[in-house]
Image (cartoon, rainbow, N blue to C red; front, side, top):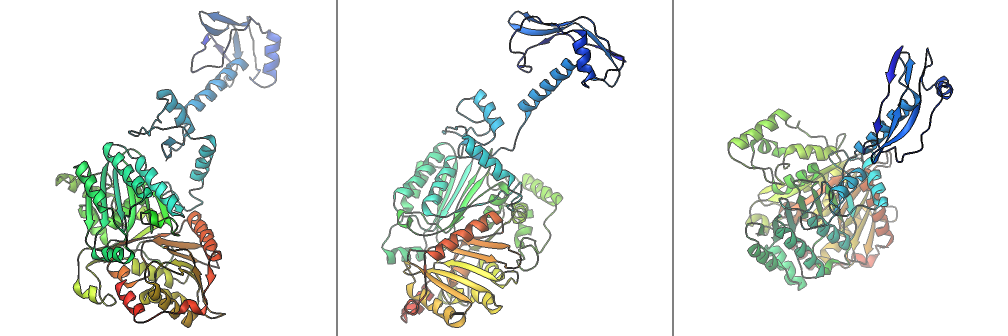
Length: 581
């Protein structure tokens, strides 16, 4: 056997289970032997001498054991020793346990971290001390919701690096999310803001004010706005104004911090990226313009987070960063017809080659700023594996022949949205489509026809009275209904009385129940395919596609089936609108 002597155990912050100094008590040898015989300590040749008592030394209570227990080598000590060890281990486990941290708003969703932050600073979280902002702990219900959301990442199609994206279903929700994300930035972060239309209104001022506050905190703000002849002509037709002057003044107010770039080539992509140096980067993108006029419009946007998703989006809209590795990987494409739609046609670069490219950049003195260090093919690969793939149009010049004949030529640059849409429609895995489209012309109909020719069904929702291209829409719709409609036809067309500004495609498989969604800024029009800068995302995360399916079903229920009067249009107005758009 082995003899163990247990001495003093003072009550300390690491051992708080002694809370008072009880009167002196003693334990008899018989009671201890009785406990030992119940199995707490193996009772082979066990002997006990003296007694145990509680004592108080100064202001700290303590336990004094003055006994010896002789037990075999396999014993773990007396029952009291085992109890003390168990309590100490339990308390240490509770103090040291950690969970994955997620920053939501200005608040930490980690309950353990929340307690540490409250001790360190009562108004700031441990890992989210954002400049000029106040952090408050999450309510218990939000903590529980965040835990469940993190636990559902795998089931919902996300990964550790690509959390599930969130669908935004209204203008107000989208603007509120943009303002919240910009407000969460801190000194050293970077905001990229791009929009097609920036019109006056209270919601616009909220966005601009959040950008000014971010600039005061030391956040770099890169803003761009379409100032081409196309948007000028659209504003002239609709009698609206632009707030480009506000961005010019902001650049003068914060030199070196705010940079405004007016786009002379048509830029229809709408996105806000918040690149954070010390916390999770986020992005909001879709089809929503900024201005109070768009509040009643029905539209969709996406909020994504994580360095992989935001880096892939930045790679799509800005191109690769200034490194040899990224230039080699610029030709990555996605195969949407064979197997997983996110398998690449070429193998991604190895880790060794990526490290080699980074070292080459350091030798040449090229610095990776916040937002560009993740703008590479590795982020794109990781995002696609997580269920989010980006397709963009990046024109880099003007072509007079393409402007005169948009159906037969396009501007110089890269245009990936049109091939991605064609692949989605021609993919034999999908036999049912639900589409919400604001504007459609003859080229848009040709994109949809591959699905109809192979027998797929299609539900199409369009606005009854769009703000522009009214006759061009009806001309395209008549072509679809005449070719594939009828009572038992493949096309079921609906008219929405609200202004529908969405560009949404939902593909489903009746055999497997799987679905894929494409959401973005690209309209089903010829100039959008070959001349405008656009941004679309193909998403196969079930959490997003299921929510989008519910929203589209609600949209269809709020719309009316197309009748003969909805297919009337006037010429040559319809043809002119097709050429203009």
